[in-house]
Figure (cartoon, rainbow, N blue to C red):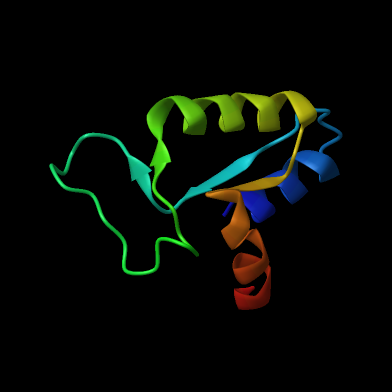
Length: 79
């Protein structure tokens, strides 16, 4: 949806930039004992670190951001 929205904005001449955030394992506090099976691949990201990465990505005008960053390659393969 974000790609389609970005393309529509571009075709209409808008200069707005969109950033898509793909959070996978962020410790938001909803679960008491947050764990992952493969913590070396998918570490649990803290809320403050996630917020810092998101704000930084928006300032850089990145198109897509994954949390944690190391799963970005996997996302690209899946697409």
